Length: 207
Image (cartoon, rainbow, N blue to C red; front, side, top):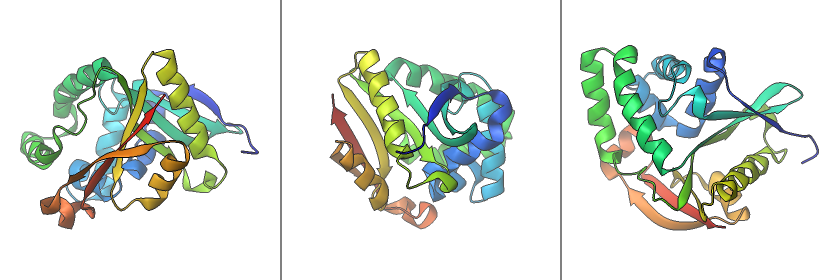
C-alpha cells in the first residue's frame, strides 16, 4: 500500500470506465447476461445503465478509487433499501437499453439468479469491487474493502457481504485475508456452459 487511493463519486460522463470495471467483476456472466454473449453489446448496455440515475448499475451507486488522478478501481455498495429501490428502477430503465425481445431474453437469463441479491437488513452488500489491471498487486483491493467496512460501520450494519464465483480463488484469497468467511455455495450447473462458472460463493465478514 505504498501509493494513496483517493475515493470520489463516479459521474455519468464516466460511463465507459465504469461499465468496463463493472464487467471486470462479472467475468463471462456479464457478457452472457447484458450482451447475450457479445462483449461489445454488454459494454454498450452497461454504459447506458451507468449513465442513468438510481438503477442497480448507475453511477450514483459507484465510487471510484483514484491513484494520481487516474481511475484505479470501482466500489458499489448497497443496503437492503438501496438494493430494492435500485432494482425497481432498473426494471423501468430496461426499455431505454433493450428492445422488447431483448428484455424478454434478459429476464429469462436472469431468472436462475433472481434471489441471489436478497439483502437482509443487517448487511451492507458489496455489489461490485474491481481494480483495473494496471493497478493490481499494489494493495488497492484491500483499500476498497477497508472503505466498504468503514461504510458498513457508519450505517450501523454488523455484516459486510459479497458474492464471487466458485472458481475465483484469487478473489476469495483476498477476501479471506480481510476476514471474510464463506457462508454458502450456490450452484448453477445448467448455466455453466454459458457463464464459465459452476456457481457462486457467498462470503460474509462480521464487524
